[in-house]
Figure 1 (cartoon, one colour):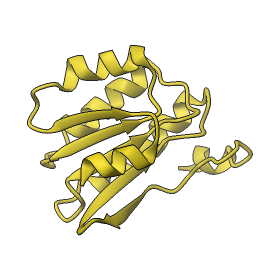
Figure 2 (cartoon, one colour):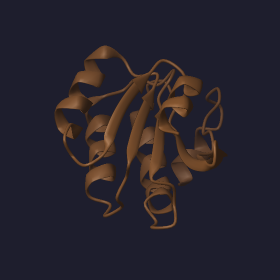
Figure 3 (cartoon, helix red, strand yellow):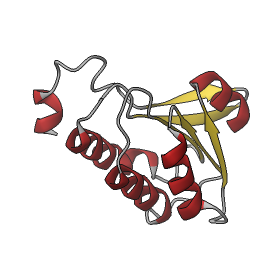
Length: 131
């Protein structure tokens, strides 16, 4: 987490991830947005947040926010690992701000894994779809 604190000069980074009550349910927003080309920072933040959003008491609805972050294959693999290997049963997973290339990569790895997938340009559409 020390690396996260050393990169405070990046715009909007690191944004705090959080759980939000919405339409009678709850959504976990994993904010990986605004980190630009800082792959190590994205991976560190995801790793640090994983214990919080994979707890049994955490929401089963998750939105990964990736706007203004350069998504790499390593980031895709880390997200896939977080979702499939955490032991947490997710019901719906949304991605906001991801490019087409990485949408295809995520779909190929996460289709038919026991939860619905949605891909959106913004958070508002993702919230509506999740709940």
